[in-house]
Length: 320
Figure (cartoon, rainbow, N blue to C red):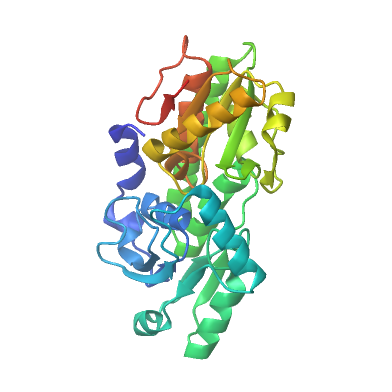
């Protein structure tokens, strides 16, 4: 996102950013952390997760109350095997630090039930709060479409007592989406396959196909609103994409580009050597259901229609 847009979304007057309650907010989702900051209420965050890296100040004043398995140095196949093993054993992938939560005494906790691989589900949070004798409200954010994601901004705004700020943010985001729609209207829509994991290969679901459509493309593998599912490279080839976008969950652009090279080789071996393969900053712009999904739409639109929309090299990179 250009700096002027980011500043416009995150700067608010003190009167707008402050409400009587809740005053102590814990976010167990990186996307929720981003939403709280966009709504000008970042000063209310007293607890976040180890993955909350945007904005850069997200972990400056808030305690880290959720940890997870250190996957640094693991290959995508090793990460997938670890996740499957822990899930089969009934083990949670994330750890809620009850000691840290006890000292914080929040009055609002933002969590989710959409994906146990992505964050702590609300039932685990409810049990922990009951154990601690904490009466915080628990708000689960579970969008499955791009429109749902925009709706969560309004939901969090209501919970924080800043509905007018939330409405302004969503109006700004919708205006940017409308601008992209106008730019690509009437143009041919490239066939796009979005790969969300590379070993084993997964095609993207949930809101990701909506991003492709909003950017002026046609998603040919993933199903809008549905979960991401495993596939084969032969099935991706059979879908006859014009463009393959590699957006591995949990990875930013440089790491995504490394994995995109693997995808390019796999597709060539499966019979699709000439298809353009692009990497995208997945963790920043595609997989986290927050305001920056609109940045993702703009980045994908520049990739699919570079003759009429600018290409953002900080967001996307062609590897082959």
